[in-house]
Image (cartoon, rainbow, N blue to C red; front, side):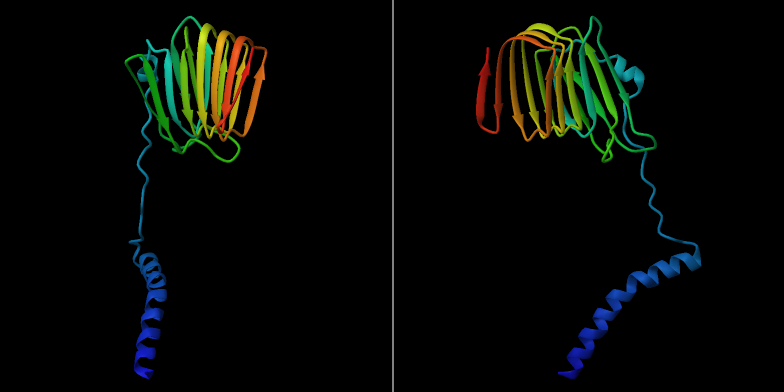
Length: 192
């Protein structure tokens, strides 16, 4: 019984001491364990400027997204300082798809700004903030899941459908909307 206890105690002590020994050896020998993070994947300004001919946006990430009505297409990305955050963006069959993570801190986030002439649908998940403004149109559908803050402002729409899952803060201001349908966590409300 004493032998098995000693063996168990010795194994436990060796497991606890191993990281200390490795770090000490690395400092003494100068061969410390180095891990260098690769540069984040980010599109160039030229790549983003080439994105056009879309009226639907699908986005997943932890950045702030601002979408505004304007005559011309534009997509810009302002990352956090340093090498934090990655972003991917492409257009397929009239849909702009954006994915990006590690783009925020507790109080701020990298920002993607999009302008386009016509918007029909936004499907957003996990964003720091989503702003939709300055659109004139017949109908707009917004699906927002786990969006920290949603702002819808200065829009003139015949119909707005909004589906929300776990929003933190919602602001609607200065909109002219014929019919608004909102569903939130299974409940639906229609405002005419």
